[in-house]
Structure formats: structure tokens, C-alpha cells
Amino acid sequence: MNGFRIQKRFASGMVKSIEWKDDRVLILDQSKLPLEVDYIECTDHLTVAETIKELRIRGAPAIGIAAAMAVALASQDIQASTFDEFMQKLRPVMDTMVATRPTAVNIRWAMERMERLLLENREEPVGRLKELLVDEAKAILEEDIEVNKAIGLWGAQFIKDGDTVLTHCNAGALATGGYGTATAPILVAREQGKDVRVIADETRPVLQGARLTAWELKMAGVPVTVITDNSAGALMRKGEIDLCIVGTDRTVRNGDVANKIGTYTVAVLAKENGIPFYVAAPTSSIDLSIPSGDLIPIEERPAEEVTHIRGQQITPDGVDVINMAFDVTPARYVTAIITEKGAFRPRDIRKLSVRGINLSDIMIKM
Ligand code: MRU
Image (cartoon, rainbow, N blue to C red; front, side, top):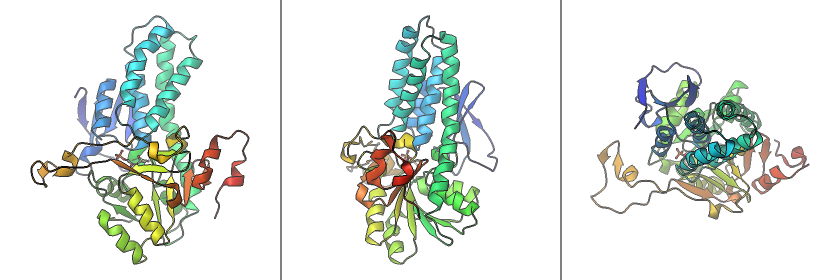
């Protein structure tokens, strides 16, 4: 891997999964958490692409930001005298980034945003276009944090004092520019003085819940308990979970939601036990071009993620493995989709793009 790593002590405060610094992209290596806090310094887009593929940075919004920064990085080295030549050299970079992970729509969303910016400024000299790309990538990161805070404000209304929230995978600060999506309502509810605790599914096979959600919530002072994925149903039956909040990699027009494998199981269990199931979805994760969740591409990952834990083999040699990274939860299991524009019934999510609609007419309020 190109680029070199720098070791840094982690200062308490808001976790930064990614940062643009001195014409470099700094990425917190999540594959090493919580045991080691290590940053990867990326000086070229291929290093960023590798970090995404290897889940060193992961989570839909975070990989969208990383892809945007990768394009900004790559653009600095492009020699071109016309707009068309510049675009011709930048397009393969965008294609490389989109190909890193197929399920989260945020990478495509970020690439489309970068391309739109260039088209709007096609009369500018190439040097100026390069500056604009850097500014846009930084803006995507900053806006993501604001979006998450808004999700927090809309989502906190569904959390009561004393509630226990179950979450799956990591849709926290590490998965975003900061603050998180599924964690934002929890953080806001606590800022509002509500006593809220979290149960984090460990989330086999990559253990984003046990390693990442537990780590960042502990740092934020939120009481968190880790459970094996198989325990969620039993705890729901015992009345120990009041609501579920998860993130999403892609939410489509009929309100179906792709998220980390196992999310569907949690949603079905929640419905069976009469527990509300919320999805925190920044609009950068919403893809209205796809009519149903059945059409969302589901990433399949290497068998070694299942056959090995931290390099230690746990299955017989040569055993067959299925390792789908995501599943689709049908809209009927989703109580509400919480976006930065408000919380909506899944069937109303398609209306977000309808011009002239008054969103407060279709918003869910407690
Ligand atoms: O494979 P990962 O770790 O990238 O999967 C992440 C998730 O499933 C998250 O819940 C999702 O990306 C939303 S992050 C705000």
C-alpha cells in the first residue's frame, strides 16, 4: 500500500474518521480499533481506494467522503490544458472509487456531486477546477456532520427518558464525517437530559458493533453493552429493548433499506416483539432511482472474514462460506426513516423528491 502510516495518540472528543490535511487525506484505520489508534496518510487515490476495500474506513457516508477526497487528491496530479482533457483523465478515478464497494450509494452520490460541480464550472481554468474539487470534498465532510446533527434532532423525539436502544453494526461518528447517523438521536437525547443506554450487536463477521460502536460510545460517555448477534431476540422478549435505530447503505424508492447483514433479522424480531424499528438515513444514502430493495447490489466479501478471527482459523479447511456484507429490510418492518429533513414513513420516502411538496404534511411527529 502506498502512503505511510503515522501513529497518533487519540485525543478524546469527537472521533474523526477522515480529514483533509496539508494536501493529504488522513484516514483513521478502523481495522485496528479498538486496540490501536493508527492513521493512514494517503497521498494518492489508489491508497484511498485500498483503505475503502479493506474496511479501514467504512460506513456509507464516510466512504462517500473518502471517495470525494480521493478525486480531489488525484486531480492535483492531472496535466490537462482543456476541460474535456481534464474530465477524460478524472473519470477513470471516479470509476475506480465507485467500484470499491457496491452497496452504499454514497460513493456514487459523491462522484455525481463532484462531476456536477465541474460541469457547472467548465469555463474555469484547470488550476481553478482542482481548487474547487478540494473545497467540495471538504464541504461534503462538513455538511455530513450538520446533516447528522439534524438527524439527531428529528430522531431524539422517538427516545424517552430511561430507554434502551439496540443498534446493529456501526452507524456512528466512525461511519460518517462525525456524530453518526444512528447514534445522533441517542447523543441528542442525552444532551436533552434523557437517560439513554445502548445495546450494541457485536455484528459478525467484522465486529463493527463490538469494536467500533462500543469504542466510540464509551468515549462519548454513553452507557453501552455489547451482545452477541444471537442475543437480540431473547432480550427483546424479556422487554429489555425499547427501540432499535440502525443506519443504512442505501434506502430505495419503496422504502426498503439495505444495511449490514443481520439488520433484517433485527427488524423482523422487533416487529414480532412490538418494538419500533427506526432507520437513520441521510439523503446522501437515499437512491430513488431504484424501485425496490431486491435490485440493490449486495457486496460479497472474502471467505476469510468468516473462516478466520484476527488471523486465527476457526472453521475446517476448505469449508464453503457465504459472506454477504449487507441485507435488505423490507419497508413493512421499518417504523420510520429519519433523515435530516425529518422522519417519514418508508412509503413516503419517494415524496422527498417531489417538487413543491410540504414535508411537514408527511412528517411523523410524536
Ligand atoms: O461494511 P460496513 O462496515 O461499511 O457497513 C456499514 C453499515 O452497514 C452501516 O450501518 C451503514 O453504512 C450506515 S453508516 C452511517
